[in-house]
Image (cartoon, rainbow, N blue to C red):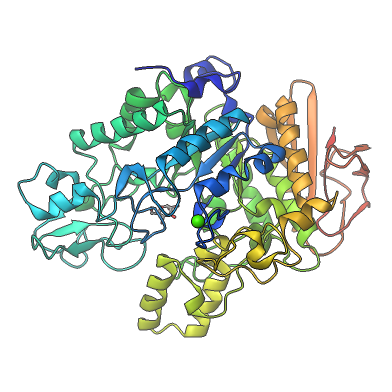
Length: 561
Ligand code: GLC
Ligand code: CA
């Protein structure tokens, strides 16, 4: 296998290198997630595209990011906006051509930005030639690329599994009369990872992309590939880590790529299994404890709980301790499946800018690789949709149908969707006050947030105390200070309802981070924080942690201690 260009990007170390005490490039880099349909449209068809992304590379280079996590741009019927792939080696024409993709890789690299592709291999589209062949002929070698059963499972039996987008995970295929397994939409049949031929096929495809010069993969719902539906096991199956090690050996071993595994089931106890360097599986996990703990037990994301800061802080503290020296975590508030950070955790109104910066400070100064979701760097807010016909997301539309049939009131569902629908993060990027927020010269595929005339990149960047420049400073600080990348984390004031405070220590260096996560003034208590007076590393402002000092709503600082 050739050792490809992904290696040349940064002064780096492989997983084996880190195991031996070195540092990997992705431990000092910040990732930026692009949801291509909603980022920048170059040709006026209302859908963001790859040339649009290329046109914004200078913007991303100025922000200072190290890599782009690119949500899927592969050939796809777009039932789940590209998370249903019909050809892993082709680009969806709505996003551009393979030549555009190659240009994106080269031009990003010229700015020291790696491209991390979304690897969606838990399932394919039902339009993938493998699935077409599988359903057309029971004898096809592709039949066993998928998971079949002759009868639907008996109600309540282990195989009677519910799909993530609602309904049974088994769907009758009219062509063969058998039932195939799908954990997401019926148009997303699950691949059968117990088949070694399928696994080799995935490895070959990964090598094909890595040889093109991409810098790694974000692995979609990767904790599901070890599933054993007949035993009722969906996540974290017994063969999962065997498959990940095999994949590493076959694709990543001699390269310096980054791999980030989306794992909704990951726990502080099992996360090191994915990410401990000596295990040679993945670079890091992307887990959701801080998200799902505020979902309803029964209605899940459709009935969010309000944020309880002491609980949320405790979750971060647990994860900081669980992976320190044992693995590596991702740090994020949002992505394309989650609401906007300021809407969920901060303040959409008077304190929008302050809360966007406060959230960024609290997150970026912990240990792990931070991810910025497009628009977060200017403090974009939830979509504010009030009618079901404004939504485009398959999950939202499926659950709308299911929950209304179950007797949930329309207004209650819409309230949940307004808080937590995935479309909150999918409205077009707000570049300027021009029509359609400068995203497209045409009609956008999903409505632009009505607040774009005063909330957009141009306006935010014109403000020297805007959100963008704050992210720039945080990214630069991470590169500069090893204590931010590797320091030991200690939670401070854990029970305080508003103050998010912690200390990071590495050798003789000590960094203190204090953030007021509320709309009220907060007063520094008489005990629990080291007393320091100094300058905020981010703004240069004089700060003090003397007992009795008042912090304004969403005030945030980092100071040497
Ligand atoms: C992941 C993706 C999500 C997608 C699902 C199925 O959770 O982030 O957008 O719908 O997997 O691929
Ligand atoms: Ca377009």
